[in-house]
Length: 110
Image 1 (tube, helix red, strand yellow):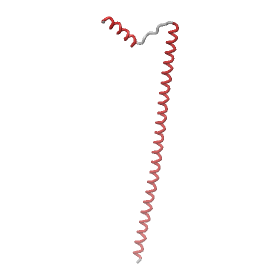
Image 2: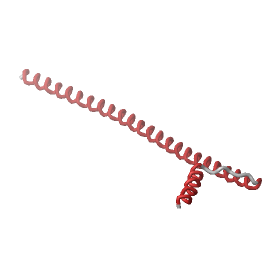
Image 3: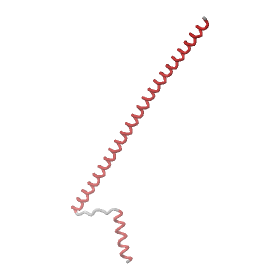
Image 4: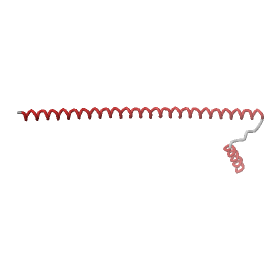
């Protein structure tokens, strides 16, 4: 009878040790999973913030370029108006010159 009691105790100890090991492994795996999940979430948040900052900078640059272009156009209008008031001739743009050159040639050929 003493042999049967010894086997029962050793099987119980084995099962207790096995279950303890399984629970420890599950706990460690779960903790590792949580840490990696948090790191992944932080990386995603950082990437999202960087993308938002890049989008804002692009919008600001676009708005700045539009303001510069409007300022240049306004300055050009003012310069033309000042030149017209003084009676100065403003040189035509190259396309205008080319069109003027084509018109007299067409008139001569007709």
